[in-house]
Image 1 (cartoon, rainbow, N blue to C red):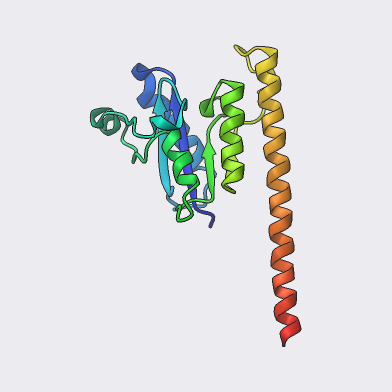
Image 2 (image 1 turned 120 degrees about the horizontal axis):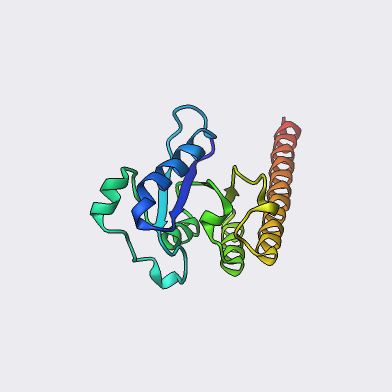
Length: 175
């Protein structure tokens, strides 16, 4: 089992409880039965901005009303992703626009996760190119970001398999 963290974001506080629970449930069904998240990160309203917002946390009453464990927002997730003792190897998010609707911020977050060797899984990639409410430039940037992620994931997976084969061959050669 690959340790997985979850990230969600709700744009408005008045609908945050339902939105975050729906996102959480939509992602949880992708995990093997009974596998808990290694961390639950979420933001309400504006998501990631600057690294200095790592200490910005939601008030305890809001967190209690949502009913999900709270590890922090996107800034804390990125901080934890860069910690060599982190408890997760991938992050799952219900939709790409929950990570960010700003193409520059999205690219930055993806770059940070790639640099930390953390995979980003987005189960609802279908229909991204035709998502209503986004400009063609935003849809294009999001599509390119996803293609970059997919290529990086494939390359890292191939390297891991190659490393595993080389290690197994080395061990076989020693016998």
